[in-house]
Length: 197
Image (cartoon, rainbow, N blue to C red; front, side, top):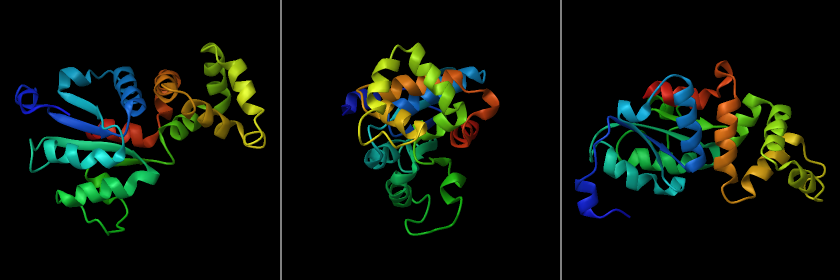
């Protein structure tokens, strides 16, 4: 947690993109660079919140009652309630509304199921398997595939399990997949949040 002195010294950004973790941040930064953008120079900060439940703290700081900068976000479908509750608390949406696109209208875009799911689909499971091999983890992946709980699951699911099963795995593979995805196949939520800011 930052001290009051560090907050006072903080450079006020033009915009912030609130994301759940470092993997989301890494992917967005790579994709922005590949699309010819320098987020830092533009004053756009991608902030990893260490989980969706921390959104209230960040909205208090950067939202309408705080620094009042342009805010946007990227979240996993299972975490929508946390984002909706936080945005409702600062007056940007209704906590109970089921209006389609309401969060998107405020710059918050959902990954269907999560970032890794979106990127594996965009890159293609077979190409992601090549990324795993190039990363030197194919033997480990084959061992994972033989586990009873994963034997009958598809390649897509097995790849997600590989990424989520190791410390730093999500961030590493998010960056590698963001480097590999064709720019015309960037997952919609990632492209949309970058376009919003």
